[in-house]
Length: 93
Image 1 (cartoon, rainbow, N blue to C red):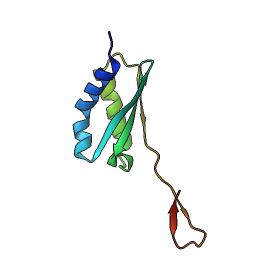
Image 2 (spheres, helix red, strand yellow):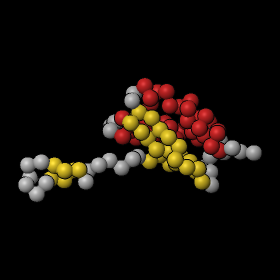
Image 3 (cartoon, helix red, strand yellow):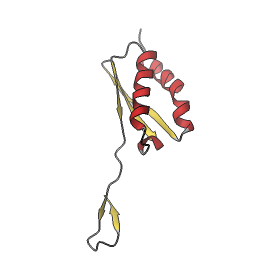
Image 4 (spheres, rainbow, N blue to C red):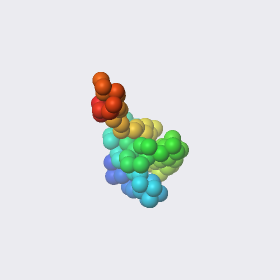
């Protein structure tokens, strides 16, 4: 029987050391109907190479967990800033 969470978590643990060394990371969000959703963490959110990291993570999971049909990589929402009415300072939104 396919135990997706254990298998995917193990594969993710194998793939994370390189990301963690650069201050990043990833976590498993969900698995539904053979599709895993993984969220990038840490410096991966700001890195200009995050698309490459996401592609490598997806490829690595699909190679290690052959039962997976697909992997979606998502990024956390980042706060946006808008000018304050006075125009002198910025406030988070």
